[in-house]
Structures are given as C-alpha cells and as structure tokens.
Amino acid sequence: MADIYREEKDSNGNMVMDSVNEKHNVLVRLKRIEGQIKGIQRMVEEDKNCIDILTQVAAVRAAINKVGAIILEHHSKTCIEDAIINNDKKQGLKELIDTVQKFLNFVD
Image (cartoon, rainbow, N blue to C red; front, side, top):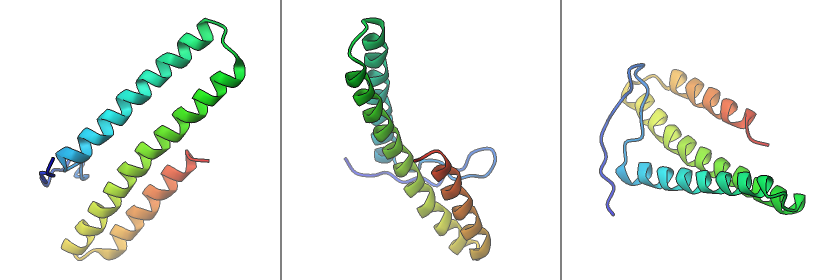
C-alpha cells in the first residue's frame, strides 16, 4: 500500500498523522492491544496463573511502547520539517525535546 501524504494540522496547529499507511498501522496495533487487554481481563476473571497474566501484561506494555515510538518518530519528522520550513529551528528543537521527554516519562 502506498503512502498518501497530506499536510494536516489539528485545531491547535499541531501536525497530525499524515500518512494513510502510518495511521492504519497504528490503528491495527491498537486494536491488537485492545484484544490483548480483553484477554488479560478474561485471565483474571478465570483466576489464571499470575505468571501467565504478568507475561501478557509485559507483552501489552511492549506493544503500547512500540505504538508510542511510531507516533514519536512521525512527530519528530514533522516537527523538524516544520521548523525548517518556518526557519524556526530553535522552537522546533525545543518542541521535539519536550515531546521526547514527555514520552520517556511514561516509558521505563
């Protein structure tokens, strides 16, 4: 599937996912994670082995971190591109650093 790029911004002027393929990939991953979460809920309801449940929790954490990394990569590219286009490298770099720090606060 070819990427179809569109320059889009939200109501706050922030870049949004601009590739149909990127967006699809993220949504597929999130739906898979949703299924994993439902599976963990069933495991807890059925009093499954704690080690098995924790293994699934670790898998979900890894999967959600990957989704975050994909979104962060996309944002990094668009942030740098915007900074170059607008000739505002300092602001672009500041925004990128702030975004990375926010993401890393939620990642072990």
